[in-house]
Length: 69
Image (cartoon, rainbow, N blue to C red; front, side, top):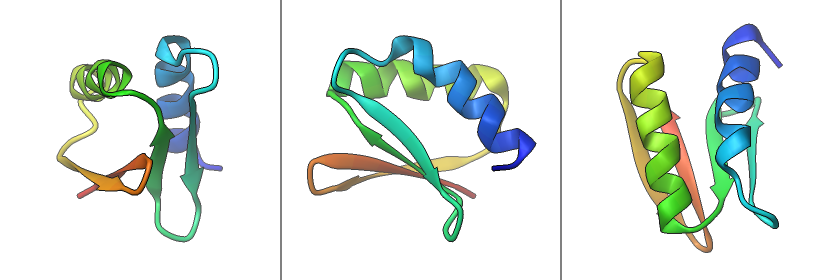
């Protein structure tokens, strides 16, 4: 895991509720979240405040994928 991925995970982990999780997949560089909409909203705000640049949120089954553009 690289510096960017570690920084993102450290920043979003505190807002995850019990049973929710976040992880990066090295092949795609996507952040996958298993969480509710309220947690997703918090994560999006955190990413925007971090200044990570553009990203796109997609719903994938029961989880969300955040692609960094």
